[in-house]
Image (cartoon, rainbow, N blue to C red; front, top):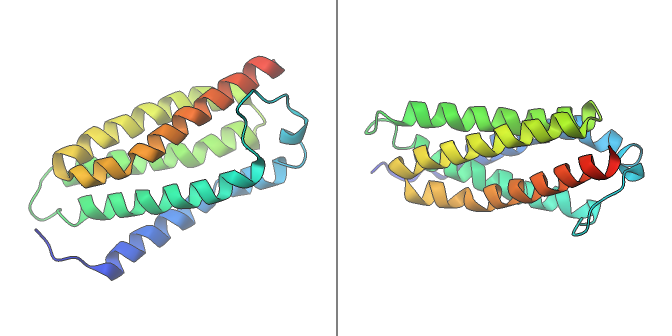
Amino acid sequence: MRRFNIWLMLLFIIGSELLGFLGSFATAPNIPTWFKGLVKPPLSPPNWIFAPVWTILFALMGISAYLVFQKRLKNKQVNQAMMWFLAQFSLNILWSFLFFGLRNPLAGLLGIVVLWSTITITMLHFKKISKPACYLLIPYLFWVSFAAYLNASIYLLNH
């Protein structure tokens, strides 16, 4: 096992946070306008909860990716696992632009289904390399599942 490198792990966390922040360019301007006017489903959390939850989830994603990346010299599966990680991360960012940027809950719903699938595939790949890395993504998968409920409900209530 490679030696723990706090600086590299922090780089992964900060990188995840910064990449995750990209979605806010589509999200933030639409919260007080378009999103405010939508009919929301039961169990809709207050808007302020999303930023701290995503901050925690992006940090967990960064730690998870670091745990897999650090095994790159001993495990040939790391490259493929990291490609799936980058794919799901890209889809995560894309969702904000589909749902909020385009103001299109149906496009967001289709995107979140693909996102959920790629998170699951990423977790399966990560589990082969580092079980803790896989387990760190469980809250993320749960949150995206909840977001899928919110997205589907908003589509149905406002269609």
